[in-house]
Image (cartoon, rainbow, N blue to C red; front, side, top):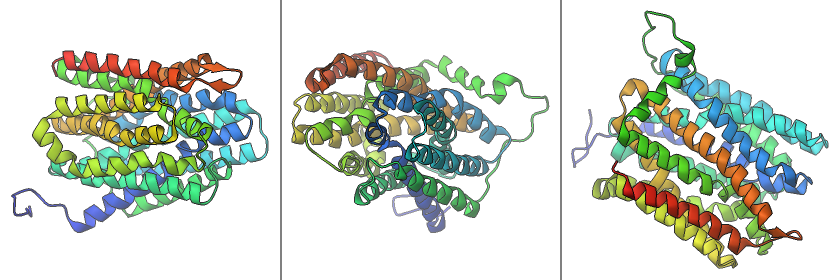
Length: 399
């Protein structure tokens, strides 16, 4: 294996290009679907649908990542699973955009969003697993590669705002094109390996990946999983309601402003290996929780510059908590369980945490509204207190 002057293993240039394009396209496809969703629905007089639309991704995270993760671990190469899901996501993203443009009823739009989410949500854990499975030293290599997914997300946001489609249903048609590009790109990737066939038929529990719940028996793993799930509850308000807050403060092209968080995230990702080596997982995750607290405190000032400063802190909070957790699982979980471990993380954060979070933060927003005006200071301080409680739990635990 080729190594650098410090003795660390190097990645082949061709592999790095493959990883870069894969994560870049995936980030663009996700951003152009997820970030403008709230503003598109509001402009289509479907504001009541926003909490349920974002909850669709949480419901999907409860149902699909473990199933597709188990499939990728045991029977079908992860690259092929990703290809199927990308093409399916494109079909339903197009259908949702078409439905809104033609005035279809809200309940039918929600069904389309839910079906798209069932297929797109597992792609995050799959792309991470595909990359991690081919790295010889994930601790030092993954951050700089994963940064390209965030760069793709940023570029996706910039293009949405550049094309002035932040509030237009046509943005979902644009997202469908990106999902098709991602699926087509997987045709160029090596298929990878799956585990040997089992000597006995798999149980339903194994087929749906529910055996991954056994990972929670380990107290160290359990603390990491539970912390990530708990903090996902207050963090769930970031994408649905930060754009609305920015709009209330007079800032247009909200998708571009939201990408400021990813700008900081990229910088953190390039340094995450060195940061983890110096501080360790517990301190880094605790620092991410602190950044989450500070972000919502800044939001509570209810001024344009304070909210934008809070958006910048999103990059630190996300990378320190969730990327560190992904690396923890890649290093501490046996190889035959890694795809399911990443899928379990997706289920607990994007599923349980976000489902509770979207409904709770949506209900809290209604409680903070008077005559159509939102008391943003009270809203964000309430969510800030929840992040504080999560940090107390994590710091007092012993992972």
